[in-house]
Length: 375
Ligand code: FE2
Image (cartoon, rainbow, N blue to C red):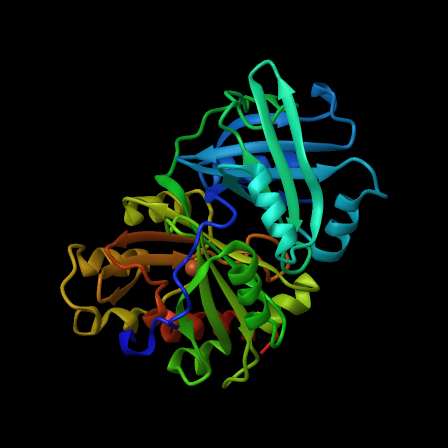
């Protein structure tokens, strides 16, 4: 599939907003206590901090879970009239905040607004015994927001207001090291305006594009462009529905999420076989990869270090580009609605997103979509 990937020639990423990395991702959920249990036991995220009635937060309960550098926050409202409750009613569980570490919050905020972003919270300093954090928030696609966080002067666990949280039992990590990329689904014809937003406001560039002419698109019925920051740590593919052989899976997402939102988060690991195996043992459901996928794997992707038989046993996908290869696998949606899911990814040089797997992958996803009567 390599020949179908191309650099779009858009200007190189510039560092307009001083964005350095993903800081954290906050999900707004119906029951944060139970979600924290699931993220801990199934995925191996470690409880770090919480806010709740017991810590003096009378608006919402919130759990910070971490594995490697990947930080997930799970929050649920106490009041039926809160923005959080309305979000839950419309979207179900989903990502509300994609937190981005910035070097200078004033630069991020002023440049973002000057360049057309919708500001939601101006730079605000939060303090406690561990120092100070400065945060600011802007809108992006759908109801998702970007929270800029400048935390150089802070030694606390997450943000002021959060206290240490220990779960009743300990669960081992499952090898996740960081967030590799975060994918947004936007509505018909909204991919280019969204990508343009990241060009204009953030200075991000586009580096891989899937168009309607690609084989992948016929199967997956999506178009996708990837935006990234200057140091390549923040990578955000943006998908929109396309006409294909079947109903677009992006459209299914939008129908059930009731709007644009985060489709999946890819979590990096250094040992995908162990990570997937241990998550599966704890009940995480991954998409089913047809056995035939492995029949001519080496002809498709070339020599790899892993034993094909082991990959087949664990249903792990492989793809290659000119820089190397990657191994990946996708969970099923992790809530009742067919919306958000996780990807587990191990990169061995490849900077791609597994485009060569689109056909095999989406045939598998479509089987499940058909089972739900949505194809
Ligand atoms: Fe991905």
